[in-house]
Length: 309
Image 1 (tube, rainbow, N blue to C red):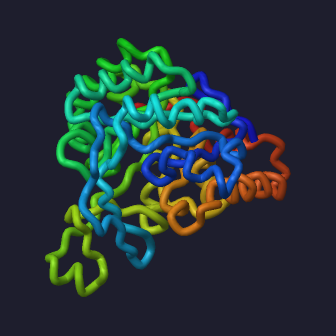
Image 2: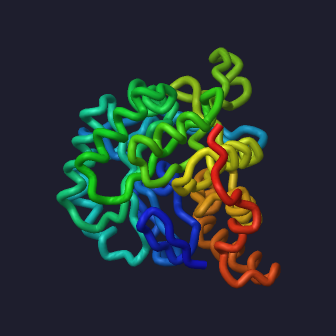
């Protein structure tokens, strides 16, 4: 079940996605974090952020809308209060980072560089649930390249770029991330959800304090697979697949599409054991097919060479 990519070695390809797993420490009492391939922390900003007003989540027929707004304790409190405990884990810990400017992204990573216990960074270039930053950078090729280039200059750890699906074609953005120095790509973040009038939201139970939310869960699974496959064929760096993964077979579908690993997000909200369950199910899935290494799933269907188009 072990996989290696971008200088990282994971004991399995299942990673807890940022924004759905707290700082990881909240799960310690209900599962063994070392059973995970890795975990990505909540997004970290230069200063603490309170996030959006409640309600922050709304159930949809096949998924979830969220408008959390990137609430977090800030990078200094994370280094002081959270990181020492995370550093004791055997699993790979990745810090998700965001900012409202290129300088803020870079400064957050600069401060994390002085601390131990982290294996890599994931730049959030895709969140639709905050004003400024996030998707503003991820939907502009020039800004996306500026952020990654700036961080790359001061960063000694592997650098992942988390991209948005909310663009006409993901391939140019994946290629821009690769050219700017990203070591891997995470795809997809949430899709921009509907923004009905307040009366309609209240009637449907989809009122969100922050307005429109990001759509995730099974509703986006097939489209996420398509976009991951498109990115895999557009770049030479590894791609991590995200989107509506509920079981081991769902995870296998992303690996068969060419992803090197997967991240589990929405499933964590209704099944706190989803990450370890899916890792075990993926293991059983491979055994049933007579596959001795999970990497064989990817090799079965991945293109020999990326088609830049």
